Structures are given as C-alpha cells and as structure tokens.
Image (cartoon, rainbow, N blue to C red; front, side):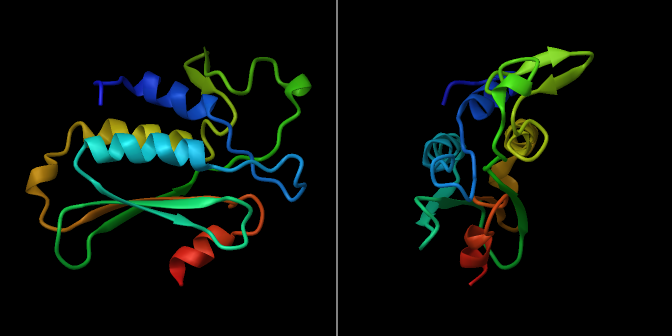
Length: 154
C-alpha cells in the first residue's frame, strides 16, 4: 500500500459510490468500497473476511482483524450512504470539497469518513504490540434494512 495521506484515503472513499436505497434502480452494491478498504487493511497486516449478505442485493460485510487473544476492540461503521439529488448539492457529492475548515461529500461524516479516520489513527499505533485483537467492521444497508448488521450479529 502506498503511504496515502488522510485526505487521499478520504477522497477515495467518498468518490466510491455505495448508495443504499429501497428503490432497486437507486440501490448500489458496496463491493467496490469493500475491496478498497480490505486492500488497505490487509496491507497493514489485518486478516480480512468478506461476507456476502444473503438477500440484501449484492451487499457485503468486511471484518478486518489484527492481533490475537480473547476480547479486543471492535470499530464498526456502515459504508453505505443515503440517496442524493446531485442538483441540490453545491458541489459534486462524490468529490471531497474543503471549505471553512470542513470536508464535504456524500457520506463524509455519516459514515464513510469514519474509515479514513481509522486508517489515520492506525498510523500512530504499534499494531505488532497489541495485547488484544483489534477489529474493523464495515457493514452495508444501514440506511435501509440493516440486514448486513443483523447477518453479522447472527
């Protein structure tokens, strides 16, 4: 993995559409984003498990794990976003816009940007010294049926 900056991670995540909608014409798979994230976490030494969520229209969960032992910490967030009317945006919703000390883009704070923050925080953690495992879970369809989180919990 190239040593990407926080903004490079953020921009890549935001530009990868993963809209979740009850309307099949608008609903998108999150697989492209799962593939990107799983590559980044794998490059950091995480083992990756990807699950196709049954009956959820080509949606996936990704669980990244590093470390061993019982317990540990799970950081979890969905990679899907709500639908958007691009005509109502003042900028391209799939491009990060920086203005007034803020970052704007579809999913920038709920919830896709979360993964850029995790990747940035991991730069400061000696992952080879963890005493318990660290898990990163990316789910889908949080904006619709929650089937992804329910499937993982089962």
